[in-house]
Image (cartoon, rainbow, N blue to C red; front, side):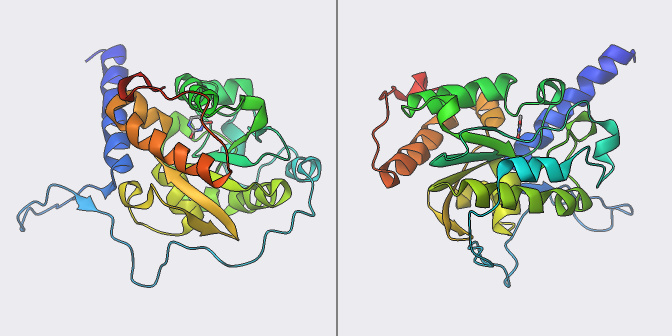
Length: 255
Ligand code: URA
């Protein structure tokens, strides 16, 4: 097999695995001895001790984004710092009513130093516009600030190093609503393993701020039919803010 065929295969497999993860599948069985019947996949179950409301601490709004960025500096708190091109801090209105939180920078974001500028980012921008807002009106950031190599899943030590800065950013902005984009952001922020399909569509509590989980724009690119659900979630967000959408797109025209 040639290098380009191998790359194509890996990228197709990664897309498929991302899709499984987005729909709540968080592992595939690996049975060395093949003693037991093979279960097709493992669906994430919420551990009994976890709730989807995060209530530890209060949002205080006393830090500034500039301070947080300065403190991050040329961050090497985890190994991703060695491999990144740019640290992707976050962009937008420091007093935004809505903060969108994704997973981690991809290749385009790593190169530009700005979150959500690739294909998925362009779809997010369209969603924001359909909501009657400009990209500059909202705040956009990720759980991780550096690109995981080959867009692999973020590792626990990377989340542990990076998430405190995200929390401080969100505390500084103190938005009226947080939108968690996709399984990883929603599950990380809410400390749950519940699948996104069950989390989305209703508000959860994140340190006193209403948080709406919804599907990731990259998932929508592969599953355009799910745009309907995301649009419903965005209308619920706008309702909470007392705002109307800019447009009322038909189901298959959204995004
Ligand atoms: N996907 C993300 O989760 N974040 C980005 O910034 C880009 C793609």
